[in-house]
Length: 365
Image 1 (cartoon, rainbow, N blue to C red):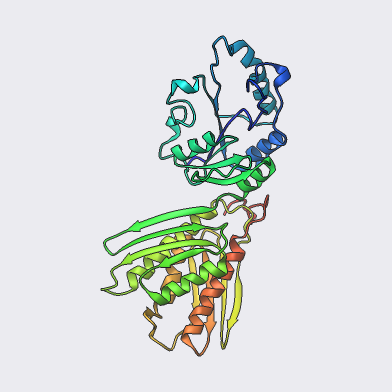
Image 2: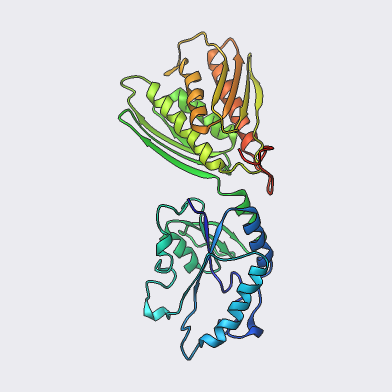
């Protein structure tokens, strides 16, 4: 999957001159403040590919001859290349607005070849200073980063800022989002996860106590999480709980990506008479060590034996190592303490420091 930044030119990389809005002489060429260093940092510290996408009204005609366009354009590209900022492709549409060309932004004619299964739609963006750039993002099925302060209501804008520095911070942190769907003869599970969230979400599995436990992950893990499950509860709860855990784990694995700068490890906490300790390592190896027993067969509509199986399945999906130790007199308290400690553990482990390294001497996890 390719992560691509589709970047506008005028007003985004170089300043757009007032009046005719044409950079048709060297005297008119000026870079947007901070853009050179920002693009250099993106190329150096992320795995994004760069594609320039620009409308140049009437390029090649008498009103905007090619020989006045090329010198500042080529100087811009040469300057950026000197900072190791090289575009995979420079796409330019020369039509006028009244031509209604399908190539002209916000049409997708110029970028059509990128709209295939290899494009990482969750983590690719259009960056531009006009709402037409954001409309291009919408038409491509990706999201936009707006270099300005307009709201763009209804458009898929994830960041509006006048600062290229803030754009770099956002991109280096990563969207850290994942959406996974698993459909079998037994269950239909959909999980949407945002590790950069604020603890918002909705959980509907059809098992009330299980929902309550997963809500601990949302609240205490401070991730945004939406889980929707339709399972064969007329048979039993096993398939619903197992498949939810697998898909949730897969979402964590996908959203963590290369795991650059994450905390990686774990947590413990008490809840009334109960105590739980959860140790976690997103190290790429699936393993569960379990030391907890329960005196009741059910808490509400939740079979307590499935608590361990939930974490076995999560480890499978997330490819993580998990150690859980808990004890308490009240089974409800003990299980809830486990889920709360697990949530706090997740919060610590996925927390990312901007510019941090992969937390491994191997250089990869």
